[in-house]
Amino acid sequence: MARSISLANRLREVLLNGHWIANTNFKEHLERINWEQAVQNIDSLNTIAAITFHVNYYIAGLIKVFNGGKLEISDKYSYDLPPLQSSEDWQKLVNEFLSNADLFCSQVERMEDSQLDQPFVNEKYGTYLRNIEAVIEHSYYHLGQISLIRKMITQRSAPTLDMETSSL
Image 1 (cartoon, helix red, strand yellow):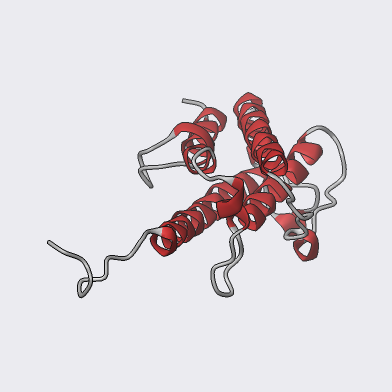
Image 2: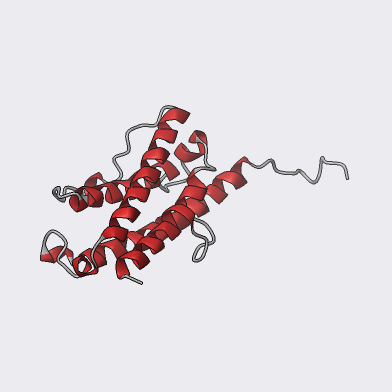
């Protein structure tokens, strides 16, 4: 199997349709989260919406480079999520994320294996391979966060049973 196809499959695993590593993926989680949950703050953690924006920000930036554009992404802007005021705003972000994820996977799949070993924009950024693998690792890291934050939100919204006043 070509390395590019293998990488694209790994990307799809974490972003769109896999269960092998984490028994879940971004798409599965994001489609089950409503707007209120997406923007809910849990202590000092980033919101699910902010994490979704953050991962999408990097994917979109790499897509631009793959299409011949300049590398313009910067860590300092990677959490600059515009306020989400409605369910429609959340759905727009999810749709953009899923669309970019699908496009990114397709672009990686079509790469010549020789390109994977080429410098990414500038030698200081490593190779295309290193950057694509970084997206995979970065995505699993944030998928874990989303999974845990979602569990915390669910636990906080679940009614508690008062054993002293409830009858058996």
